[in-house]
Length: 322
Image (cartoon, rainbow, N blue to C red; front, side):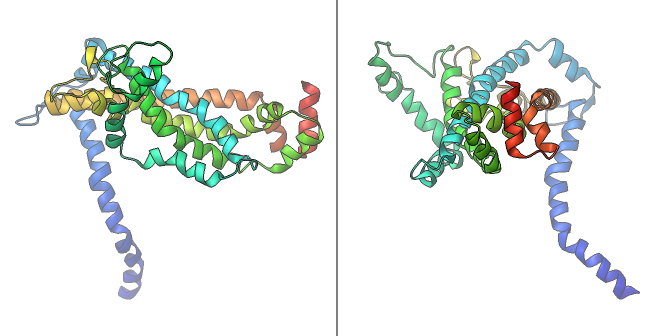
């Protein structure tokens, strides 16, 4: 009986280190941050329970939080969502058999992803330099006067968005490339037989079939965009007390959380901001799911595929409907 019990317990003993580490570094911090969000605490001394007061203060009287949220929203739109506008066509090109050296280009586009964000940002500081930067040099050919990209309030979001796009377009391209390779070739062959143009093939086959991948990639962009920190921090921080450059134009919500915790020693409010961001990410992901479901429901092609129709009939029907 004892031997039988030892045999049952042994597997759990082998995997227990993972669960212990997961509990110590994931579960406990999550639970502690929820606990802190209901407390007033400066990092030392006794905590004071304040209930929902931290959330109420952040939502209704913290204008700075609203400003950081607007900065984050601008970077989310122009730094994260625009990646997909470039990544999908780029993935289609890299998936084409007509392109020579595809493996080289796939590797080259992915390299920025594995490069340190700090290194990337430092390099782009030189690119954005007002007097000796590459960007101003190129713009001078079309008569544009030198711009101080990382010191002017209106140009900081543009500079940060360029860095984010440059770094993460390769990541999304790789995801879409994997999605493209899962689309059955029979669909494209049927489209060719029916005389469909290249644009028609992509509109009626590629995009509908990529919708689940688009949902995943956009969701990852929402999560990353709402937590963006490295690029604006390195680009805009000149001094220890710097807060996102001129007019706080690069001061994102994740940046604000760090400032509350490290500089202001307001752990309760910082935790409340973190959980409000989490709720916003959940809402945006839910909206993303609804939008994708809407397009999936309206598309004829995927529905017919689920019903088991042949590829030729599917595309023929599609063409007749149009």
